[in-house]
Amino acid sequence: MIENYKVGGLAKYGLDHPSLSALNPHLITCSITGFGQTGPYAARPGYDYIAQAMGGLMSMTGEPEREPQKAGIAAADLFTGVYSAVAILAALNRRREMHVGAHIDMALLDTQVSVMGNQALNWMTSGVVPRRVGNGHANLVPYQAFPTRDGDLIIAVGNDGQFAALCRVLNVTLHEDERFSNNPQRIRNRVDLIIALEEITAKWSRDDLFERLNGAGIPAGPINELDEVFANPQVIARGMAIEHDGKPGVASPIVIDGVRMVADDPAPGVPENVKFDF
Image (cartoon, rainbow, N blue to C red; front, side, top):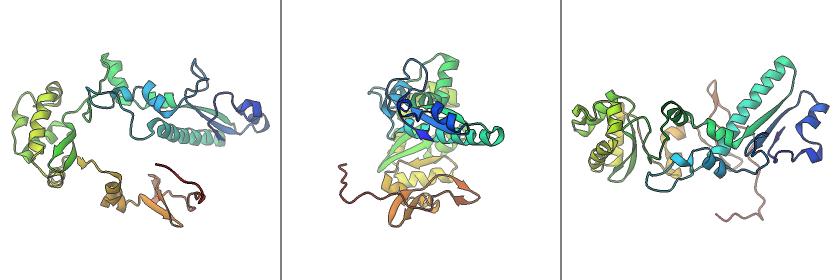
């Protein structure tokens, strides 16, 4: 059973986990709340936006001199759903081995804090609070969006060899400058390097630079809008757009033994008298 009531909300109906597990000790219940079943905030309502704010994601999302931004998707909601599925599978496996049920306590805030990952460890090990760097990367430079004549392109340099290759593509010798000779130096001199690179990339067309970078083994990719995403040949080849009975959908990312895990039945329809105002 998966439920999303506030803490204690199901008890008045006799549908809380203790009541139901008394009837079926093998029951697995996954309770998803904003703040979890315990702690001083347990009784509070919580939403994705709040979790992104309180969990640190917004503090490091956006441009340095502008206000914090939330993610363009419901990141805390979606991550909590994924982790809930993992927890349920783990509980099912334990039940098969130990013949016991489980009460899974999933919180949006817990999940958001957990997925801070490398940024949280950056702070834990250095004591330096991460700040917003726009499209940049906290630990790698250059690793961000760059302007071209007709759109932005992500260039993701992961090591010194790739930086040297980037310089060769751009026909510059920045990799020979000791300010940029290795990644720690590039981090220290991030602003100067980015300004120099942007002046060069702005003269290229996006597609030409994208192809040249790929040919040189430098990770890169255009910033696509959704129509461009689903027109991308790789997305098409991977079958990420699906359709059942004329109803479109987005496929699961899971592929097992070469078969994409997609439900055989279509999504439920929307009654004709229901209208959406986007």
